[in-house]
Length: 248
Ligand SMILES: [Zn+2]
Image (tube, rainbow, N blue to C red; front, side, top):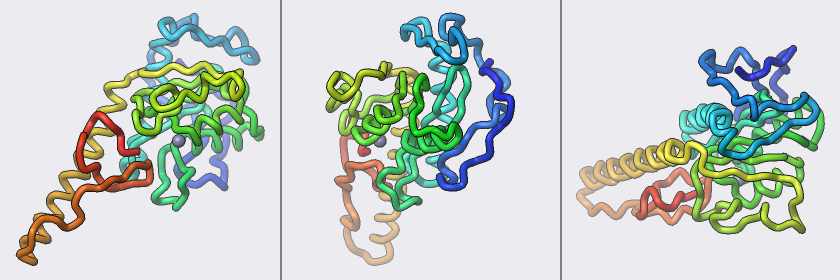
């Protein structure tokens, strides 16, 4: 089970509904046992094990991030979710919401970082871990470094904007980073499937809209066409190459 907090913390007022502190009562009852190796040696000195020994623990927190991603989907945003963990406690979640917030920085990681920092009243989050369903971009990698996050665990890889090895590896640059251990591919297939289904739905809706337009106007089906969207703010479907390159 995830360690309990003594007292739930109120949702910060300045971060919007896309990020919030987590009350332990929200956590699932059937949480898998956390591997002893994954536990903190003490509350002040978290111990971060090798990926193999932490796999069950990593999957547990990744599932919480997946739940946050579904909140993004429900809001019509590209479904990416993040969870900020201190010790064995999920202290904040965030989901991708740049469209609704009119904010290009409103990625899931940024929302979770802001919520956790507000909760802890500290812009540094040393010893904390960030779980996110999609490989962080360069912006989020920078914020992760500024926050002194100890460990990042991500699900699906992002071959278009991933900054943890897919496009660039910001964390491998020791001039930039001395702190963060990165683990990728935890529940990768499930995290990727959530994104694929989102864009499949978008493509289907786009086709149906074009068909309706063609039926009413008698014109061809070139209304709108394929999108070259390449960022996480896009609500348009990618024009081609589904499932292998995230249009984020
Ligand atoms: Zn990002």
